Amino acid sequence: MLKLKKVLLANLLLGCSLFSSFAFSEIAVIVNPSNANAVDVDEIKRIFLGKQSSFADGSLATPIDQPEGSAPVEEFNQKVLSRSSSQLKAYWSKLIFTGKGKPPQKLGSDAEVIKAVASEADKIGYVNASAVDGSVKVLMKL
Image (cartoon, rainbow, N blue to C red; front, side, top):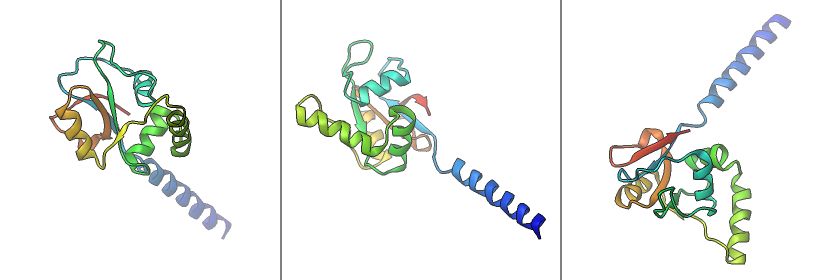
């Protein structure tokens, strides 16, 4: 009986670990195809936190966000911004209150972000990597 419990527990743990690895999908950070800038994670973080408003070549960098609570947002916040949604909400509330910044524009879906980034050279956004099409350029996958 004890051996059966150990086998069941091992299977349960294995199942949980497999499920958790599929909980998040790969995120692609995207820009307009005409954007020739190379960026790293730190630069993306500064752009999305309002600490940097241009790319390395001096051109405007306008971040596009997605709705709070969506899978791409949670993944991006964790991997790039290293903050939870509540921490970001507090961060932006403080900046807005003091007049020192405004949060990125929020669009409703991967498709809307792709459309906005494809249509304007200054936009930078993130989407599920599986949603990317040929109308945008992928800077990096996370």
